Image (cartoon, rainbow, N blue to C red):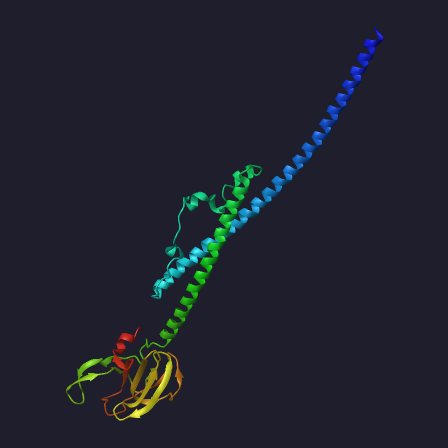
Amino acid sequence: MRKTTVKRVLLAAVILSVVQMGVLAHYVVQTGQVTDQDAELQGLKKELSQSRGQAVEFSEAIDEMRQRVLTIQSLNEKLQVMFGLEPEQAEDADAKGQGGEEVPYEVARDGASGIRDFESLAEDVAGEHAGNRWSMMATDLKNELSWLDRQTVRQLRILARLEKTAGERVGLWAATPSIWPVKGPVSSKFGPRISPFTRKRAFHAGVDIIAPRGEKVRAPAQGKVVVASYDSRMGNFIRINHRHGVETTYGHLSKMLVRYGQEVKRGDVLGLVGSTGRFSTGPHLHYQIAVNDKVVDPLQYILD
């Protein structure tokens, strides 16, 4: 072989070796980059998985709060009806200027979690739609929180109204005559009757309840004693102001056990049955109720 040919072969071998070394070096560099990229991708997937879990837990907590608020809302609506209150108008009833294409809320949500298409979001994390999906999910959660905030304020306002009404009703009930002041047969009802004294037609302003002399007479509701005195017709009599325009009177007592200005509660002993005064034919209690200065039938107020 000639020297020129040998030189060419050796040169080609050297060049080939250099090229091979370059390719090998490039492979090593590219392999390292791929490894780094793979590690970065794995880290991103891990962070996404953790964020997804946290978002799902957060959304489930919001849904649970929503259900509780709806339960409270339902109860408040029933209580408003029971108390005779005008229910508050729903917040959406006066919404104006709204529109646009929409999808039913249940369809737009992924089950109970409330996360919009989360699996697709994970798959498209590196795609062009990922940002939009995150934005839509964040908007959903923001709307949920805004709804909860408005509903909480509304239900608290309704509860305050119910509490006030209930307090008024409790006070009204405590001050409303509702039990027999003394047990016994009614000898004379409320309204027109033939007077046992004049034998003429007269109006009886209360009811006469027959009971043994000395039987305890009890207050049918809480109130304040405004009269504890003697009258020639009614004998020893007591009058109680129960507020709210209601007063009760107890006549012909043999003994009074309360004094003017004394506060009494339902069931407290006021005095003892007797037959004092000119308008009495025997031991009994004359029981009378007036509402806004107008006498009414006491039997309508007796519940026991």
